[in-house]
Length: 256
Image (cartoon, rainbow, N blue to C red; front, side):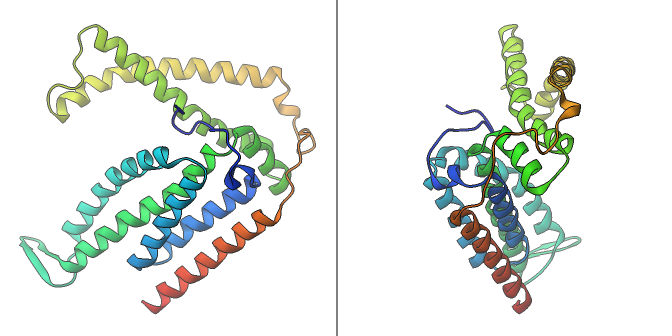
């Protein structure tokens, strides 16, 4: 079982694509999601995202991601329903009303966020972090320290999640019940765990910094990497298709 944002080996077309093309296509896909409020078009993009996940065997991870993004977007949707009166009145509120337009806008927000998140997260499941860093430096000429900082941040997310899970298991073995009580009690139990997690994070970050300096981090340039990242027909097709999606999204946004 792969951890969160951990590279999963494979031979799918997404695995074989140039890392820069993957990042660019995923970013354009996300932009297309935010360029229109057409619910049908957004639903099509959501289906395309799941189809991409199925093509590289990431359906389970994608469903887990969709659930997490859905939970977050649901909060935004509730706020939108309560604060954005639109359409025919369904429920009258002291400060306004909930209308059919409010529900449609909330549903659009949920679908948009889930559809935009899937390709971006798939990139990190089908691409090694080293390849992302080196490709961005070689192809886009981004300074190595900035590319390294970005990919290191992504790399440490699952590490810190595993540390937090270990700390919670240790506290559970000591009799702490994280599943009992309401949300307020759970928050009160979680807050003290931030201290050991912070200490562990500082230690890991310091060790990583020392290891990077020992390996000549400050001396790296675009020419330091031996691996080349040429663009193939699949990469160009993916970028072109993403540009078309953005153009369609913009056109639909203008028409609406």
